[in-house]
Image (cartoon, rainbow, N blue to C red; front, side, top):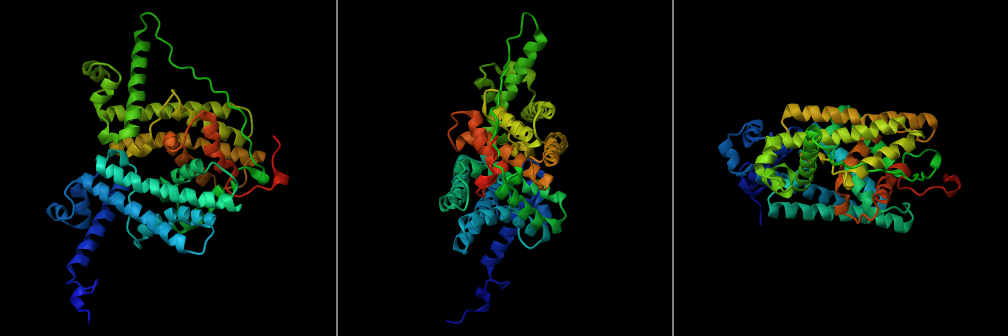
Length: 433
């Protein structure tokens, strides 16, 4: 049977094709805005305006912003699995598949910026979705995780990769790429593909110089904890109450997202009256902002102490990362996950990101120190810092992926990929320290 022009997918009379094209354009524009402004600051009117549509026209495709976020995340997960489907059919080794998937995150961002492909939303606010939507996205995210982990396990079984804790390594790799959309803007577009190769080289070879396998030293972490306020020290009592509010708020924001967290629920969790709670916390946005400030303060103290410590640049970098990991996963924590950063209004978000950038830049100093003392090989410091910062943020939910019997042992497993890489080491060059 001859196909008529009206049924051709490229025909202007093919209504389904036109509908699908418009839907793709809407999701791409929404993804671009969600990545740059955050979903809370983005309205349906913003999306419509960016496409030259009326809000009424947009409602024909999506009724609520939550539905739009869900559809964007659906596209994101479909894209990830499509990439993996293609890699599984290609003539590649397991480690080459892992590398190609890692670099595809850079390539996808670049294609969207040049207009060669659509924008894809970073799935940062899964926790804020409605239960059914959240379950659907989480299921696909877990499936993606397991597929990448399978690449690493196959590579280890064949001897292509050294033996590492595959769950920790997979979480670190995914965490390292979660925020490429945020910082790749700092590079010239012509540098992005080379940056992808250089970043994967860091994960293959690790930071440790001369082919040595870095052996972390025992880390003595003393948790001072909060001591009861003495007598009538009301200022200290007030500080401790605020600390309790911020810790509880952080836990709820990390688990439920900004939209899912409830101030009433947090007050009930702390067993305090709503009146007492609202005396200290005016609204949810103020609490989220305070949680970010608290977490940054903790990281800054860890960074400062590491800078003063003795040892090589690599040892100081390792100590810093492990202490932050401990703060995230012990009673001292949790620290805030940056997945909620887009819930803050622009000015507050800029302030937090600026303070975070300042704290993260300490890594540059330690990496430079390591290059000078010979403990760290010659790598791109910015890329190494960005990869580790993303992984550190992702480590806040490591207990959801693997058992944590000892926090420091889990930290050593988690960061091993950054120091020793995935490629097998030459036994003749292994460090005896």
